Image (cartoon, rainbow, N blue to C red; front, side, top):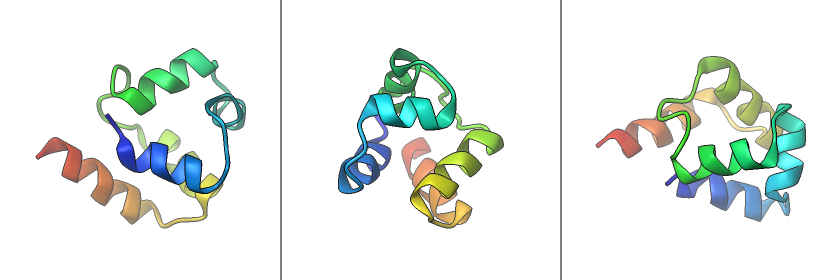
Amino acid sequence: MREWLKNLRKQNNITQSDMADLLGMSQNYYSNIENGARAPHLSLPLASQISDIFDIPLSKIRNYEEALQK
């Protein structure tokens, strides 16, 4: 589960549906990404979009993802 993503989303008062719209995907697909059922490794384009949405460095997302792999 990507708690880091869920926490960022909630801290910014964004719903899963809003995130899905911002990322150009269905809410169900986004939910699966957040829960870890889809995209076990975030693609660079998706990570870049998330970086832009939350205005955080891409390296921070990489660090979050690397921590998940451990």
